Image (cartoon, rainbow, N blue to C red):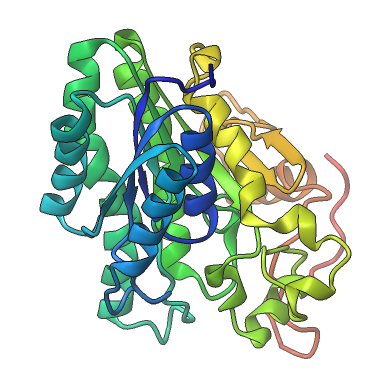
Length: 325
């Protein structure tokens, strides 16, 4: 008996990378899987039925059960079709995993509306397009597991990912809301912020990598070929799958509304955004009082993640040191 024996799962973006690892592990644990992937390029363009069909065939050849789906999560009809295919094929739906994604990296002042719309449509709208029809079924049957994919780009921020970061941050937020909306019906919703060497992380330009490294931001990609790293095995996309499978299992019945960072052998749970420092005044704040309170209490020893260069003239930078509050 596998941990997902008899369950039916829809896994988007499962023709390659992390999604493929999830689909393969789900099948190995006994789940029947709808392998969803339109076979697009990293930027979302093109179409190729090969990746999804290949994974479905591989699962079947290994003794598992799977069917391929080539719809796009960016379309409402596509999301509905994926859910319908699970019901029509196996008569039930237990799990939805939203891995599908694309990248259109650009600094925000150069980003086009099409680049914004494309990324938001696949990531944020794509989650709605699968979760909405799935939620109707899961609410009625009083059971379900929804696992979304957020990113450090949305939680912390990555240079040049204005569109991607916005969508991934929104996914973290909608995960918490869905958890509260559906928890009373026996449905859980959690999210993964993964770190892995995939087509998407490897497509990040070297200039962006250097900017992110300078800001202390680590991504799944690496400037050198992955196989040259002694840690490459820990960054393979398959390493993300076990935590996804655990959250999809019955053992995780009471884990709901959380964001988990998963990279290689490391799994951590992120704090909900809550107040960490507070100042209070029983009345209207004066700006000079706020300047003192913010600088010396709220933001004391907290650095600007992207400070202007030393040779740039910045108003206020040479302000005399303020006394501690």
